[in-house]
Length: 274
Image (tube, rainbow, N blue to C red; front, side, top):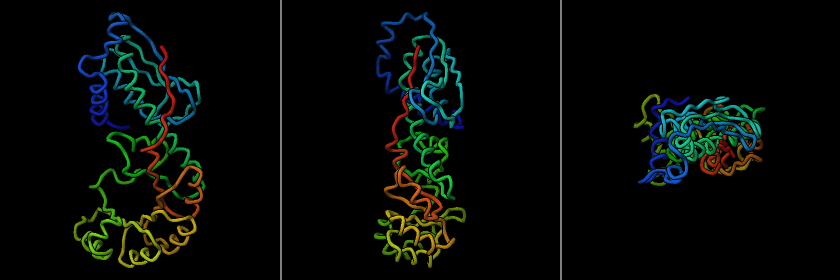
C-alpha cells in the first residue's frame, strides 16, 4: 500500500480544483447541515480494484467525520453488483467528495483491470507486463502493480534509457554508451532502445544491462531474443494490445511494456448509492 504522505497531496489538489472558490453550492443549498447518510460504492462491471485509500482520503478530507469501510482490498477482483466499500457520516461531506473519490477509484481500477487481463494472458510464459512513463502525476503505477504488472522507470532519474534521439545527438551508440557508463553510478542500470537487429548486435558487443526492442514484429523479437541469449534483459515495446500480448510474450522476451494501460485505460464503472 502507498503511504498517506503520497496520497494526501494528490487528493487534496483534486478536491481544491473541484470545490473552486465557493465550495459545493448545490449540496449546500439542497442538503441540511445536520443530515447523516449511509452510502455504498458498488461495482457496475467486473474488474480489479485499485485506489481505495484515495477514495477514503477524499471523504475524510472533506469531512473528518466520514467513516469509510472497504469490503475488500486493492488488487481484489469484483463482479458487477459487488459492494466495494461503505461510507457513512455527514451527508454533505459524502456528496461533496463523491466525484473526486470515484474519479480516482474508477481510473485506477481501470488500469488494474487492463493490466490483469494482459498478465493473465501471458501467465503461461516467463514474461511480465510493465508500464511506461506515459502517466499523469499520481499513482497510476501503483494501479499497475495491483493488476499484477511491474513498473518501469518512475522518472528520468532512476535508470538510464538511451533512445534514438540520444544516439543521434551523441554521435552514435558507442559515444552515447561511453558517456553513460562514465556518468552512471554502480547501481544505475543502462538500457538501449533498439530499432533493428543490426543495431542490437552492436549494443550487445558494447555491453548493456537491458535492450528495449521497439516496434518489432513477433518474428523479429524471436530472433532478437536468441541473439541476446541471456546477455541482457529483453523488453518488447510498441503496438502491443490485449489480443497480441501473448504473441509477443511467447517470443521469449523478459518484459513487454505497454503505454496504454496507464494513458488510455478505460475507467471501471463504479457507482455510489445512498
